[in-house]
Image 1: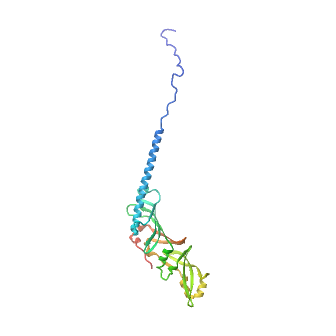
Image 2: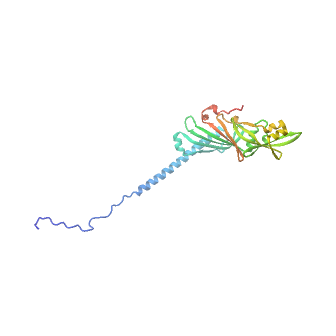
Length: 272
């Protein structure tokens, strides 16, 4: 081989070049950090949500006590359905439920539950509407029925699905007790109590048999009783249904959404 010729290239020995795999990037600290931030964000959300809910329910509770002239310690339950913060941002509460026992309206007490829909939290205070339920136990129902002329309110009882009462009819100078089961219903904004069953002494009798025995005296037993409740309620509240459930008479009402802004609907109604 001539001088100057390039020398033959010798092979590189095995193992001289590194064949170790590249180290993976350590991403797990970022994942942990993200998880911690997410947990803190959720915790902050729930803390803010709890505070917002507490403020809203507290304000509503105070307003209810003020409007109904309830004692400062009178229990009032307030519930806002769903998350409060998004609803406050949107400007209205989707569903607001208020409940309180032994609420007195015009001298008549009952347990009241109201569910209002789309209640504005700022501005005019409008809402799309509401429903209400008023429950009267036996004592409270007697107080209401005592306002009805001629009704023997002191004999009233509750035996689902009816209201019960009793009257004494005179026959040849003898008092004969007559028991009456009255079926409740709603008509023209009033509670209607209609005879559903009759008992003479210990025996059930028909209306015809009672009239045959007592003549016109039976009219006081066989009549329907209309119980007007409009004077106890705002004009924007309308009775829609009434029934005896368990040991209470339960009345359902529709509430005009405009009652929040219309003074005329806030005034109590009248009875004809």
